[in-house]
Structure formats: structure tokens, C-alpha cells
Length: 248
Length: 91
Ligand SMILES: [Zn+2]
Image (cartoon, rainbow over all chains, first blue to last red; front, side):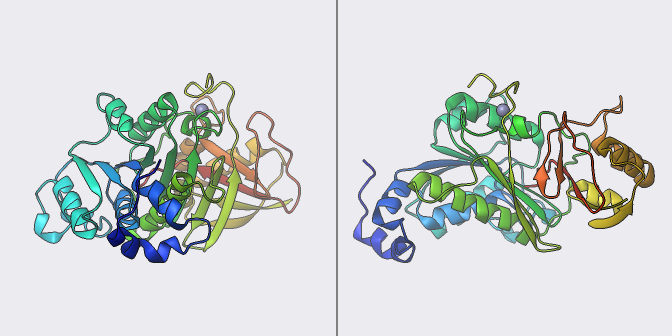
């Protein structure tokens, strides 16, 4: 049974509990849920912020490195006074200020082969916000192995792609992209508003999955282009010979 | 025949355009992709084609907004919209 809400929580979340189909039951499910967000920059920052604000019970945030000036145009959980210091400290401090009811575990590392199993074990859902494909493929593989939903959020320049992976039911990331794309570079053009758009769409997918409302993007990719304001849902297909989810 | 070709993701930066109308001689998707590679250069071509000239598995192709299987590419017709999409991972 999901945990009861306190009267303070009822007051805080009242306006979203008016959302059709969500109500107090949905809010309680959110309170009883834990999510992994990795990484927590231009995309993961808004994801963690909106999940915390909406009242998710627990967040595990994995993000390594120290804050650089060039992070600040989009990584909204970072503050100027923290340049040169660990990003994760700025993230956990800001989330604590935003919603002290949310339990936040900050991990000062990005996802690796060594830590991915233990990170995914702690949560009910994973938000993939990593800028490198090796981290994305690791999270995909581990979510398939543990049977946990994965919200895939990605962006480049003014475009975004969001999909939901339900292991055993939908295509996984390796079904969609079976190889490391050859030209992807660590640095890419980004406005904070474009990455935040992907993040906010991903958060709503997560909230719907955790609270059991609405159809999600499972098996479909939402593509948006903020340059031309085109938006499109693309149906995705499983690959029977997928190296990751073929046997699931 | 004339196609509308849409470039998504990094392809757009290499092509320098989001979308264009293009006259092509062949309705074969691979022929069209090869001719685009010739027009837009090595970086563009490398995103779409492997060293052996085959289509990379990380490319998604849509014809008139519907994804098509890479092992069963349809013949293109005059007026078709060909969309070339690649994996992105910005975070
Ligand atoms: Zn798969």
C-alpha cells in the first residue's frame, strides 16, 4: 500500500491532485516511489527538480565532476557560487531547499559498469539523461535485466527525443539504436530550454507510469523540433535479435 | 522525381538545412542517401553509411512520416517525404 499523505503534503500537492485520474491515490503512489536520475545537468536537472517538486518520495542522483562556468546556461540546479566545487553538492542542496520532504541520495559519480547495478536496484524507475551513449546503454541493459521502466530523454541543438522503455514489452534502447552512433561528440549545441523540454516531457511520462494514469510513450518516440515547432510520435519496433532484450 | 528530404539531429548541422526539396534520378533509398553523402561530404556520409557502404543500424528512416525497415526499404515516389534521423544523447 502506498504511504498516507500528511496534512502538510495534502496542502502542498493539492493543485496537482485536482488533475483528472491522479488524485490523492496518485500522489500517494508518487510518495512511495524512488527514481534514479543520471546525469543531472541540462536535462536531468529539470527532471530532478520537477520530480522533487511533484512529491516523489526518493531521488537517487548520479552526477560526477566539478561545476564549470559552461554548465550554467542550462544546469539549473547549479549556482554560480559553486564553480570549481562538486556538482552533486549544489544539486542536493537545491533539491533540499525546493522540497525537504523528498529524500535525496547524491552519488558523486556518473553511471559506470561498476555502479549501475547498485544504482538501479535502489529505485522503481530510471530517467536516462546522460550525454554519452556508453552510459545510456549501461542503464538500458541494467533496466532490462532488473525489469524496471526507463524513461529515455535526449536532445541535440533544438531537437529532442523522448521514449519509455518497459522491458519485455517495448523496444529497448539497443533495439532502437543497436550501435554506438559514430559521430556523437561529448560537446553539443544546447539551450537550457530545449533540454528542459525533454526533461519535463520525461517527468510527465514517469509520473504517469508511477501513478498508473494515461497512456505513456511506451513503444513510441516523441520527436520535437523547437526550431520549426514540429512534433511527431514515431512508432518503434522491437528487434527479435536484440542483444539486450531479445531473450526477455 | 522530386522528394522532400528532412534532416534530423546531427545530419542537419552537416547539411546546413532542416529540410529541402531535392530532384533525384532514382527512387532507391540507398541511391538517394549515397547522392546526399556525395553532396554534403564525409562527416554527413559517415553518420549514415558504414565503411562498407551499408546503412548504419543507428539511423532511422521515415517515408511520409512512417518508419521503414532497413532490410525492406520501399521504393520512393515523386512527392514523397524522406526523413533521416540519427541517435542523439544530449543531456
Ligand atoms: Zn532491445
